[in-house]
Image (cartoon, rainbow, N blue to C red):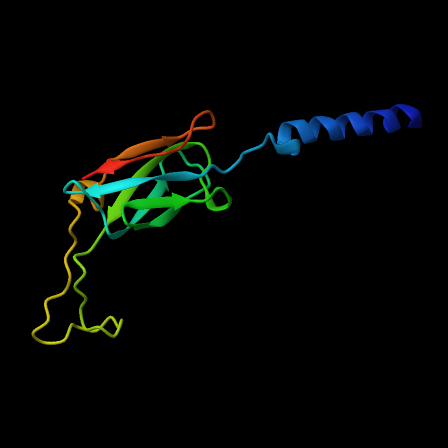
Length: 141
């Protein structure tokens, strides 16, 4: 093969690699996710929502729920695919008050999870992140 043929093929090979690897903004992108969470028909004051990949996508993310709303910005967003949803929200009562893993102060009852297990430890709630529509998911618990 002549030097000229090799020289002409290199840019074509580079262009093909660029197209197939996602250069130019057409590769795998993250997407913003947002929504509302209500608990007993009221906005959930505080909690945490997590999105765990089901289809092997390379992103997992979550957000704080404040006054019933959550938002995962695009730069921390999720790749398209299905995700298992986990929502947790305690009752606002803390243990010992010093953030140590030791046993709570005698006479103080530790906080309890208010959200039913179907939305956290036994969650089977699945939502799909897509490219072609807003990824807004509301949960009425």
